[in-house]
Length: 253
Image (cartoon, rainbow, N blue to C red; front, top):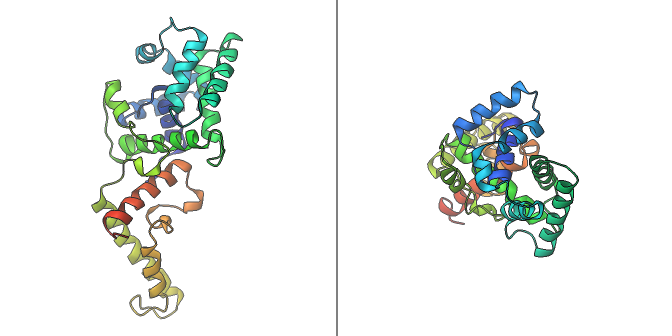
């Protein structure tokens, strides 16, 4: 379920600049490029901005303010107020007029938004939307390993994903259920051992095991490879969406 930090950074940048998933093929190519550059993400953003795809979204003919307006609208959509978007457009325009490249202002804006706390009253929803869209891109590019060469298909992979975590595409429920069964078995063995009775069926903690599995949303760590507390925001969002689907469709709570 977990991608590398490099993969998540690539996916976030692609989502921010193109409103699209990278896809498995492009993601693999971008990993090679970034590794060769010692993870120079600013240079990678510049590389992306030289593409024909970028030019189709942000023509050179756009003025600084027009470019900033198109980019901010694509980046945050309805997840921020008009006044906050106007402020961001002015901030980006000022940086462009001061000589900063389009790719650099985009990189800085995406990085800033990605690092904002989800509880922020001005940009929290926009931050969560970016995290959720990156989770959707993760699902498309890594979890299901899909690829495409056209922008429309890659954009469709994240379209409709908002700050509402239930809009993230999820793992097929049969796979999630298999994860739950495996997690249940592993946890039973562990807790039985902790009780020193070597019997997972009669363990004094068997009731706690059942409670843990029933509290699907609260027990999100049962399907993650590592501790939930150390998982990235993207992975947490994807896991929560997955388990909310299980909660609704399988357990019918």
